[in-house]
Amino acid sequence: MNDQALAGLRRITGVTAAYVVERGGPPPDTGETVGSTEAALLSATVAALAQAAGDLGLGDFGETIVEAERGAVVAGALHGGRAAVVVTGAGANLGMIRMELRRLRRNS
Image (cartoon, rainbow, N blue to C red; front, side):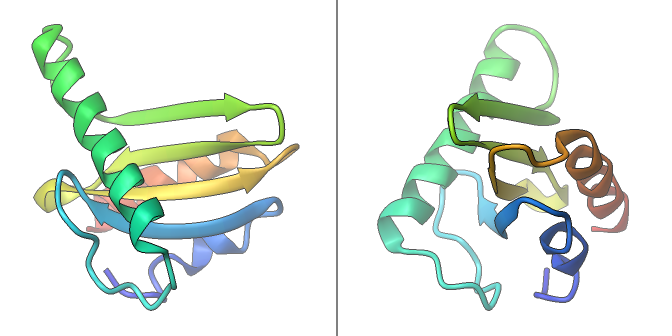
């Protein structure tokens, strides 16, 4: 997935970063500079959530939102074992982000 595909997410007010990670592996080159520690953490987090959903009999991983005091991390599954991950500041429109993640999933 190229940088242009993620542009819709990056235009949403409050989004500080948007990129693609492989579940359980290194992220593909998306044109965004993500430190190796952050990339590994996000990839492992998405992989763990996907594994938990399966182990609990909930089906395939779809989306998750982790809200924190100063922002959120929103991740949505894409085809091919990848996930789009969005990092936001406080007050970002999480509903709009979820809609854009679903559009990406349909088009991936």
